[in-house]
Image (cartoon, rainbow, N blue to C red; front, side, top):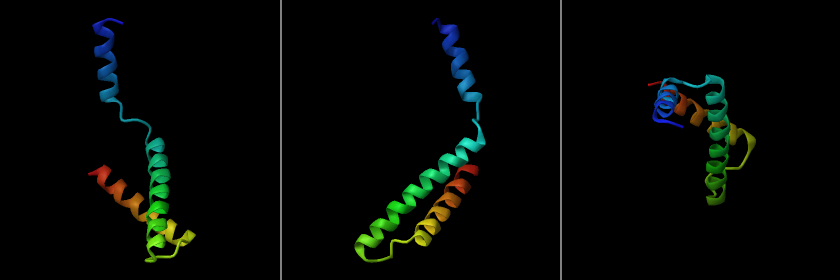
Length: 72
């Protein structure tokens, strides 16, 4: 691989924005897992109940925040 190939690859990676569906899916999965971890920790401390509704609420809030931050 010569220097010309490296420069072309770097330019291609820098210009690519990626597939937005993959980014949204990754955001959803990571938000759900982080939300579950947060709710589990709060339940461990006795501050909240570990339930699907609480986990979903935390995941939606985290998803929305990360989506808004990534768009700005």
